[in-house]
Length: 312
Ligand SMILES: Nc1ncnc2c1ncn2[C@@H]1O[C@H](COP(=O)(O)OP(=O)(O)O)[C@@H](O)[C@H]1O
Ligand SMILES: [Mg+2]
Image (cartoon, rainbow, N blue to C red):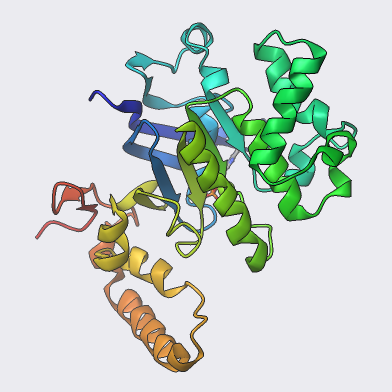
């Protein structure tokens, strides 16, 4: 309890679907359909699943960009589903976001000093000189130099831009950074570099991360704990070892098999394993999902490892 930072309980976000001449609500998309997890102070938590599984909606609900249909979000012991409570707790300062597409999330008309300086200006009273000094320090922690201060986003490479996004997110010394597919738009060779800066920042500032990705390969070094998400629910949660060494849900196994193999000699083996998994998945789908195609409730396997399988 003592080190608990954020606790999400039975969170649901159902989007209304409107159709017909009168534009009535005719259905709901169950984007997030009853998920629970806890992030400890300074910890990194991964939410992994394919596109459309509801990952971004979790992030958006956590920062108040979409409203929760039901469930609770507790921050440092207080229910922050209410906007007024969030304001009082300075929640919007403490919880920052990094997005996938830095070109559209960084204002193209602003110089780097103003982009990174903006959250500082909003939350702290600093002199012009002190502000510049702080921005400079932040730039240095992500490996950028003084010259960057007066440049515009388009003058940087994708990897550098994402590092600027990281510097901005950490500017207000947040307690939690939600990183939604932060390296998915980058070349493989640049991904590791950006991730390393994120790790360095986590160490330096003791900030917790919620790391959202579709790729289990990318997050291996980033996350202490992981939740595997499919169809709005968690199919499996566990420590890094639980998920990578002992995956139990077929969906987790498929995500693991989807990690690209760099090892040329093992490629053929890997391909065969993948095919076998696909065959198993197609043959046993009904064991993993209920008759409506929904994920079963999570059941405890060990104290850290939970999986959603049909009860015998
Ligand atoms: N604003 C919205 N209105 C209606 N449906 C939405 C909205 N945002 C997302 N969805 C739907 O919710 C589901 C989950 O989306 P999302 O959270 O973006 O998934 P992910 O980030 O895992 O790709 C998808 O089916 C998506 O089409
Ligand atoms: Mg998304």
